[in-house]
Image 1: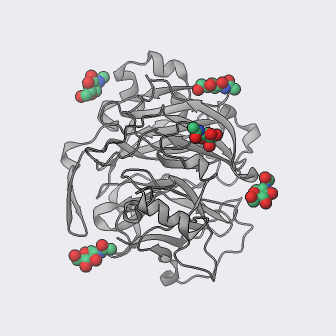
Image 2: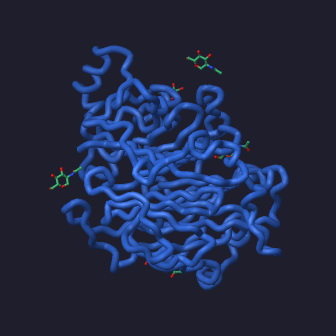
Image 3: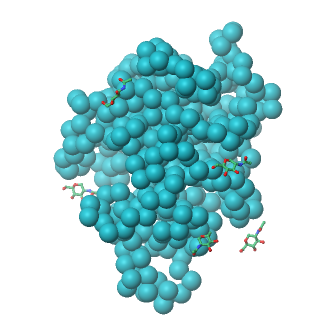
Length: 402
Ligand SMILES: *[C@@H]1O[C@H](CO)[C@@H](O)[C@H](O)[C@H]1NC(C)=O
Ligand SMILES: *[C@@H]1O[C@H](CO)[C@@H](O)[C@H](O)[C@H]1NC(C)=O
Ligand SMILES: *[C@@H]1O[C@H](CO)[C@@H](O)[C@H](O)[C@H]1NC(C)=O
Ligand SMILES: *[C@@H]1O[C@H](CO)[C@@H](O)[C@H](O)[C@H]1NC(C)=O
Ligand SMILES: *[C@@H]1O[C@H](CO)[C@@H](O)[C@H](O)[C@H]1NC(C)=O
């Protein structure tokens, strides 16, 4: 298997970004290009002996390592390597942002350290699939606390309590906050915390998809309250039977994966209906009067849904709302032509999302109806685009990476 990181050059024209000169690109140059690719993932072991020992003891099994999420920050690309199978020595790491020279298969440096990636040590990271970086350069890391999720009969039963860690990227990833999810929000041994997005409103909120088979939903964490809760909705957050079967590059798949991809829309003023694009509000000025949509989709589904962030942020809503109340708060935006794993939205309200069986990446302007003619395929490659997962924007250079 070849793992790749692609970049696409996308022209933005937001107020924030318009100070950058727009690149003079031809359509051909806007296609994704491969910047890194690996036959198997290598890690930055401190010595050859250490690497050999890790292989000998099955602590490192090269072919079992895959990259899931990716986030760009300050000249680095942070990557997650969920421990679905044994032999993943670090579940969070980084590589240098691609430049004009250097290796195309760089070694992954464990982050924040080797020690913090120790399997079976519940103080360290066990299984990280999603990460997000906020406007202060704090990385929010979700750890479902499990290992070997795809290895039936694995003898390793380290079930740590699922947790959220806040790491300061400007201080070498020093831990500034640690939070353990209670059992009724994310169950130890059964949760599957997958993707996370951060809302800077009211002291900072995380919206996290839990696509566990037993209790899927959106986990909400308030940094100010230091509390979490879960919003559940069966129609839109569970797998749809008609989307179970599909194939990617000739491999037939059949599975039911619940709510997975999640993306955050730009703020708008619900009283006036005006969007904040052009004059993005300063984060200090944000208050609860501003609304934004949270977009999501189960992997096993053709639908895209949204729910207002203000409802997710309200712990009373999660506690008091009846299933009917939650259903009424959800908008079914319409159909995609394929299943989707990763997705991301920029601050102009453009959603980017993978179309797995099409080997493609699409975009949609959320100010338009989610009709098929408004969903534009911006990249399609049978060889290089086989499973679009986590995506990230590189603000400086307007690149979308996945
Ligand atoms: C577990 O990991 C933490 C954080 O790296 C470390 O401080 C601690 O010593 C480790 N515990 C054991 C028993 O190795
Ligand atoms: C981060 O780590 C590097 C290398 O270990 C060190 O040189 C640097 O001083 C550290 N920076 C901070 C802010 O701790
Ligand atoms: C936040 O909640 C966690 C529970 O996981 C607790 O251990 C921690 O002390 C709390 N932190 C603060 C600052 O209240
Ligand atoms: C949601 O679906 C699960 C599994 O089918 C079921 O146990 C639960 O009662 C359902 N909840 C509602 C509100 O229908
Ligand atoms: C896609 O399928 C073709 C035909 O089976 C195969 O030759 C190719 O290696 C596959 N591509 C990847 C990236 O797995």
